[in-house]
Length: 342
Image (cartoon, rainbow, N blue to C red):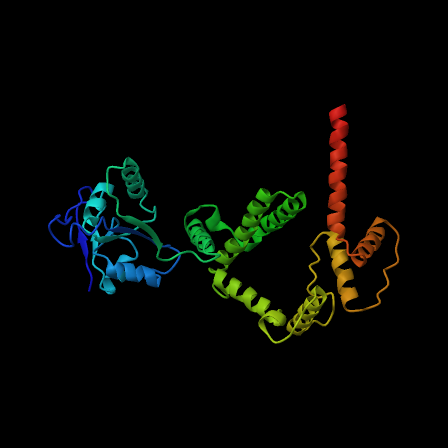
């Protein structure tokens, strides 16, 4: 088994004497700064990292509570808890020794800055320096941070700890509209921020759902459900079917969705609480997709006129909500123009 040797972090002890260990003429040695990600389970290190650890003359770590240490000990790696200065580290490497430094969360900036100053002085024979990522974040790894932050906020924030699905519903609608506005405005920075706000709603609701006494579910259940749905509805990607055009993809999607939902009416699943133009367009889309002939209801008034316009827009491939918002923005600009002149 390995061990952690505890020494005073302010004075590095145990540096080898020049006359001991490797030949003092063998060269200035090597320093390997080993970095790891806290988002990856401790101990899941790369093969080059394990090789560097096993081949090192000394392994140092300034943080005795570093999550990797128990796994290094179990693997037989002797780790000395120490925070040497840059000069002490260079002296330790003298004679061709290899020293591996297991970096803390900050990446040891004091050490790397000190080594850079020594190298810049031109007065010190520097060891070979290597930055070795022992583990690294996969795409989407920051989502784990979001889940952890949400867990703490839910537990410790007086406002967040009292929220319910019903109380948060209005924020989901607001954030969705702000996202659409950022998209239509073409503002990339705003788009990134609004996507984060929408993602927060998903994580917040999932965290609340974990506490349900009868039917709890977590963010992992939410993610697992959408993953399964996407795979099932993309047989041309994950299965044996083929699709070479967007139309064929849509056909696959609608067919698998119809099997899943087993709806008795094309109107099932259409939320009536959405904006009126979007509702009318969605109903028209369902009718067209089902190849039904449904005459528009006869009636007088603006409502029926708007319904006819929405159905016509959908048939022409135009989103009536987006079209009206674009016209409203033009109207807003005209209003501002008049105001600036008055």
